Length: 241
Ligand SMILES: [Zn+2]
Image (cartoon, rainbow, N blue to C red; front, side, top):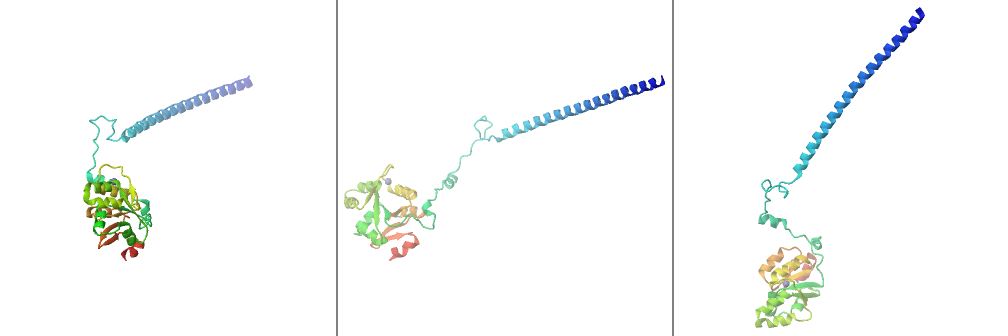
């Protein structure tokens, strides 16, 4: 009886113990569950907050001048002043000017001839091609553009000789695509685009304009011969003789 009782007691105790352990485990599980739930909720909140920030950042990325904004909220674009625009529109430097001097120059020389250069040459009784060669000690090819011919034609009968000289086979003709017969702009444009030319002119304004373009020598009539200006150093001693 005593023995049985003892056995029973231990059994009872065991049951008691297991129930206690079970209850403890349950409690811990519940606490853990609550903890995880809280954590999840926190995470969700954080995510929500982050999302809100991101959308705010996106909103900030639209420029105040954006056309999607209503006109009342939109900022009006400031138009640039004339001087600012001129500062921005700097012509691209030619690759021929990579060295200190223009590498595209060199015999045979391509010489763009201006109207008054032809007239001065006739006045001084100079043969254009021959005097050019005497000046540069190399083959020279004079080029006349359509607008220069146009200018000479406009000058009338007095300049018939000039027109006849231009029609010489040694003169090369260049076609013009622009309107009108104003040669100065045309020559400046050509010289800006192609660095292979020398400009022959006696016009002060045109000379001043061309001096601003790097790497373009200028030829003019002086003292009954041609003088070259701004020729790269290597050629200058020859030209000065
Ligand atoms: Zn032209």
